[in-house]
Length: 112
Length: 115
Image 1 (cartoon, rainbow over the protein chains, first blue to last red):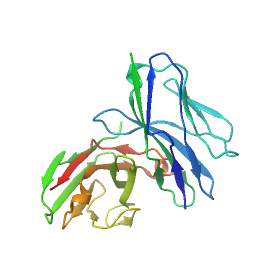
Image 2: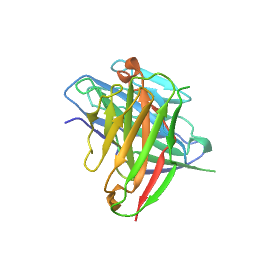
Image 3: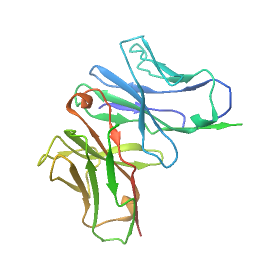
């Protein structure tokens, strides 16, 4: 069945450093990938969504590229800020089921 | 911005208790969902609905019932609550087009504790 894997449960970085949060997926259908962000005591919100294969998408300083060859959609930012501390979910919308499947999430903590 | 409201925000009950979580969306969305969030498991889909009177089973439906009474209202029912159902529950909605693009609008969450 369809699945999403986020390998890092916790990532701690100092402000100003780059970050990459890993996301890989499995599906036999055409994949649509998303990143959701959830700040403490808030609801998850859509951060960005995939475009065509090998095309980068960007939003609020974050960017990600769908690579079908490696089944990946890693989230990156060149310089993290304190306000980026949050829980990040990768999600797969399978064209077979048209339901979102979420990864287990990565907690990003940015230190001063 | 889509508005999804959940109640209660916090609920404590005992094993075997009866709990109803309510969700209302005011954006005329067709699709509504109930997820539970647990550390290490992310968000898991319990039930969802395409419209009033419709109900679909999600990935972790055991122990849960749901009912969509109107386009706006979606309820999650736990008739015999168990400690394993202690969790943070999120309701979400999306319109017909956004359901195909993954744009979900989440409520603020309902924290349920089963003692």
